[in-house]
Image 1 (cartoon, helix red, strand yellow):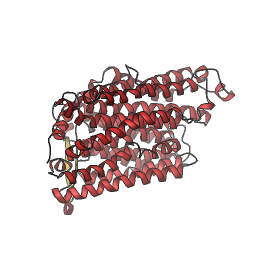
Image 2 (cartoon, helix red, strand yellow):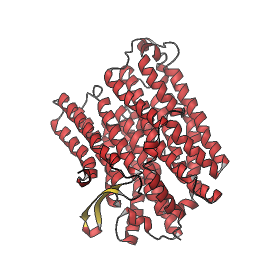
Image 3 (cartoon, helix red, strand yellow):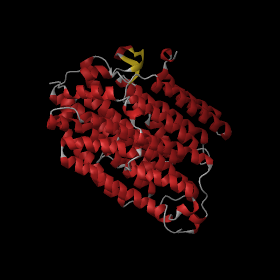
Image 4 (cartoon, helix red, strand yellow):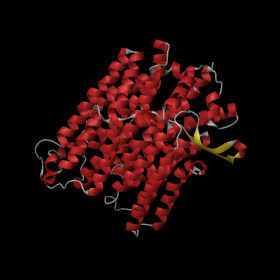
Length: 504
């Protein structure tokens, strides 16, 4: 039964159409808007579950494929499919969007219909990015995503929201122009826009290097990697809580996913030649940005910088493969690096989403994000404090939480390539603990600093539901990562074969 349904189209278009329906209900009836948005978000998550339950982990081939001719003149098709890399990210998107809809329940009073609609449409577009197997379709979804995010930050953001949206838009747009040029070039070579045809395309070293740089610009801005990371702290600080959660939990993952789907399989020789560049950028992100996070006064800024440092791990795990292969002559530890990067992406989605929601809970009550305005929150909000400390520990990579698994796998695999890479990567555990625990110490513990903190009310049932779901996800993935890693094995092995087979 399920196999006959166009599952991927449903998962993409149902939230988009749901978002349009929410728009039509309009702001006059906020109760109806919320109920409809919640229903759409729950159903979207339920529709996406069969992707996991009917998924065959034994094969690396694309599953749940849909193919409809779209622009025959260009040989571009509406071609969807998922593998072990994209399917977990689709589920993460559906799960986080549901939490964001619940999170904006009482907080958003201004243009509530547009707010909910923007997130639902955004969900469909992001799932489209993960499911697209046609390069033009991928590009359309990739660019369309900017629009709801632009509106979310620009309408419901903070005082410097216009600056933040423009910066976010220009940075991302500039990166993706180069990617489009690379896609058009490969289309001229392959005669179609099929991503899987691009994987097989024979390319000279010069072609590969140029295409690799084009992809790198497109995806490094999204991840964001150092030095093109500066849009992220601004966007995060100005975005409303829901916007920050989606930015951190999903949007950043698209960059990492792009490397796995495009840069590595299409240009393996260039990636092998330039792996030192990506590894250096990843280690700078891990060490330097960790130090930058230490001096932040704004809670959101601190978590934004922590996101950049944690995403540095993802790119390190993906590109350490070549170093391991050169150093040991085998791929035995390389799979661990890629899987570690993938686990880190999903885990970071849960943890950073949770931390932004925690900041949102405090901000809704006090309307301040400055660390100095808090202190002693545990005295008035003990339940909230327990959640915040748990997520803080997960962010620092405490064993037993999901944050530890990804980082540990990446550090273990980087040992096989070089001791010094592993050593520098491991410093993040110390730096991560330093800035996260210092944040927790100043905000949660100590004496009550001002009268506003003394009046705070503990989390209500709505907030408890959101934080409990995230806490369960973080702990479950930390204790039992197998449901996530088992679906990736075949895809990772297939990628490694691609990557180590030279096209020259």
